[in-house]
Image (cartoon, rainbow, N blue to C red; front, side, top):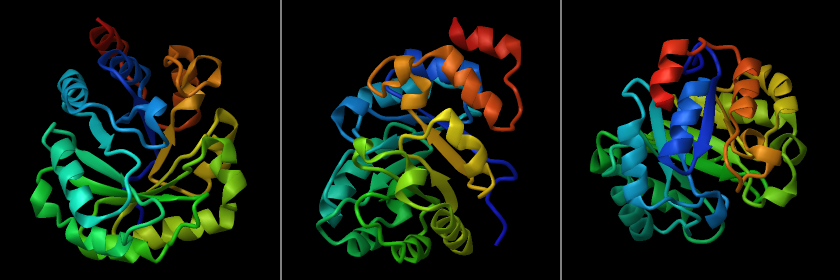
Length: 244
């Protein structure tokens, strides 16, 4: 199957309305709501996520994480339902060690959370089970990403080799899922990862002042990553409108 989108999209993780507006103005394609101080996939309060969705123009995709949870069906159902109710386009679910990931995926039938779609995250530094990709495809997920749980483990390309990342992307596409890469990615990783043709590249630390993921987003850093990923530039008038 061909890739989901014709070009790789730029995902920026944000923790506030102000950061979301900055990311949109810089040309991010995908706004991801996440609290970097609360874990690898820390969840923001639903009221903040709802405010971010309302502040971001309708044409921009918005996702939100549900936190670093053990993959147990009932736990995830409650968390996903709460986040889906904010109006985001996608809810991201990390499959951490413990529980029964396959059973949890099967229990998350997409009609339960319509119109939000589901995205699974496999953790590169936690012995990821790529067999779960087909389970996600059969369950009606929209996409799957590979990320890192321990941000001190190093950037994704140093945890999983490019050939294995390419195998991950190809497996996702065979299941009709979009494929995303994230995990302490920096500007210098963009070129080597674009060759693999992922649908998404996700960033947080590289977009922050001093490269610290818990710091504030920096407009120049956002623009540098945007410039490295081919895509349509954001018109100046929209930049000004969003930043007001």
